[in-house]
Length: 362
Image 1 (cartoon, rainbow, N blue to C red):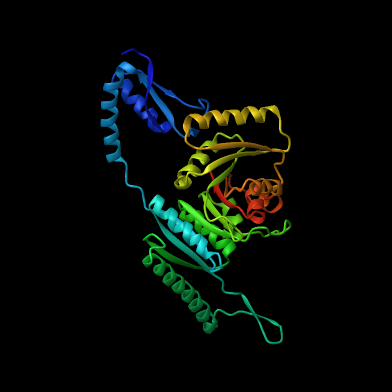
Image 2: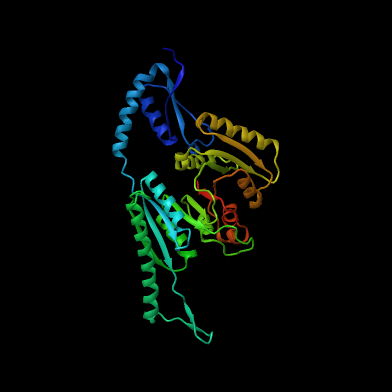
């Protein structure tokens, strides 16, 4: 047996550092190999490398210490998927994907229903009169209707579970009073769910200032979001487009996307949109190709450069021509002023595309 370096394990950067410390204390020289040594904490996984002659002893040590670390690690809280609903026609689509992914990631589902109580009423003479909270009859009627809507949906879901159309997943309804544009983003920020699934109308006017509740949630929360357009044609996810800016964080976002949608073994299309395509873009695409051929050899991948960064129409045109079922990309939270006067790509795609979106916030 020679002393060439071999890979002992592939772990997160933090766990790899822990393993290295233990092995070094036991007299075993250890190296950590990573794709980006300048920002190792951003890597999807790093390699713990040792001499081949040290492998038998190192395996015993690592197996022993990792068992102890698992005992010390507190159990993670139950994962949650939040599905805001408004009882539109497309609620079945969000339910289907919600139960599908709840089973995959072992999560419970919270259906969030926001009902609105108006601050004023209009009389028979078309005169606006101030609404009074003492009007118990109107309050009772609104709340009764909200409870009836949720009860009907619950019965429909239970029938589908009994018929085997949906997996048996624990779910519950959360009812909140207020304006959906405010309540839903606020609830999701406080709840910090593992996934948010929302419907969106898509293809809205370009000059619409208020915009979609879905777009607002995407730009104000940190949880990954699956946005399902009402006009979505596909029933499966066979082709995934990933919009990349060649950011190191994209690697983590890509890994999350693949893990969530790997059941259908989709084909992956990497898309880089820029106002001006130059030689450096070609170099970066080449780097992504090399990375994926090493880390995901079984996934069929395609790579494209689009000469447009700010036009969602050109991106959407590419998605339609290539029959992309889902567009995934990474974004960040934006301040209110920026969202109103300089809408981000997530907002634009939600408002204009009929393609399903998966947005992460790494």
